[in-house]
Length: 311
Image (cartoon, rainbow, N blue to C red; front, side, top):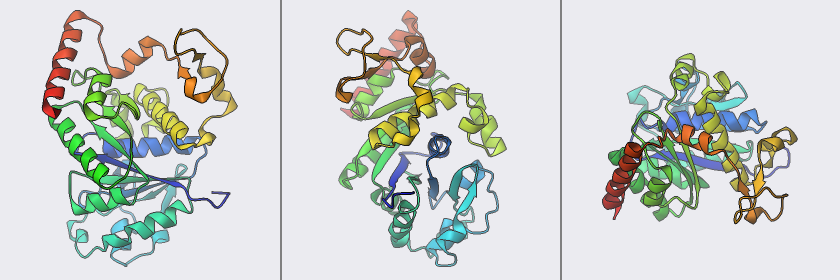
């Protein structure tokens, strides 16, 4: 960073594993980096570390575990490539013992002084280690699928975050085009995240191919549906967090400002009165929604089940 100010630490959390948390952390970080922001991604999932594999770091010389065990410096564990700085974790189960998680706060503070954004790929579930990584963050982004078990666990994680007095800035719903997801807005309501950034990431084979290559999908296939969704997530969070570097003059033509009451195009005015006009077809495609009567009925039924589970 050039102005000496601290960056923003964002924890990516989920109630259970396998919902796309690390994929979100990597691609959100890559989207920020593509906008010339200085980004560090830390594997804070100390029990099930896998960040390194997602970016091709299968045998790093030093990891966050080495730093927490006082066997390496933070600089040793910082691996740079593709515009990102990655602090991977160890996949060796023995490395989980003897860690001083209390110094994680010092590690994050060090990184915040050097980077615009520090993304913490937190562990899944509810544990002391997860609580520590969430507590040292400035805000938390929840990641979940629309399966009831995943939503329930995400809600529990949200409750933990609330008790830690850390704001939840949004929710990401993954794999929304494979038939497992219906009604983005309704489920966001059930999770209590309607006032935050809510983005759906469609099921996309490009994501699987990018993971095999060790390259974030937003870099490997920028035109893929998932890449566009992660880019939208980055833009929305950048706006929320005042990261103006994401918005360059070349991007201005992509948006049309509309009057929130009439829907008519209008010139820029008070930021609080702006609505981004996104084509309905694009929203439907990203959310994996179907306008058929049968699909609508299924969405209503799923929403009723979700609401009853959280009520």
